[in-house]
Length: 114
Image (cartoon, rainbow, N blue to C red; front, side, top):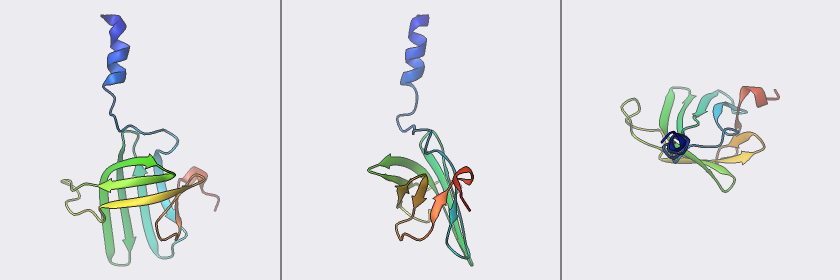
């Protein structure tokens, strides 16, 4: 029975768990007067916010990596009943994640060259 415990532990891991090289805390850089952060959790969940002037947007949900991009799929939750978007695709460029409009990039502090 003990021989099966490691296998059982492997099988009960979440199917949406993501690669550790992409997980972490990202900050939006290169967009004036805009604040935004993104947290990609190893279990495939994310948290995001964007502040621009009086506009505050929030979202949380699941993330996946596919075809050179990180796809964020927002879900209505108790903390964020009205997400700021339904889906958001961020293009992977080196260690940065670039929004669809190509303005700025989400970077992790250790990767930020500024």
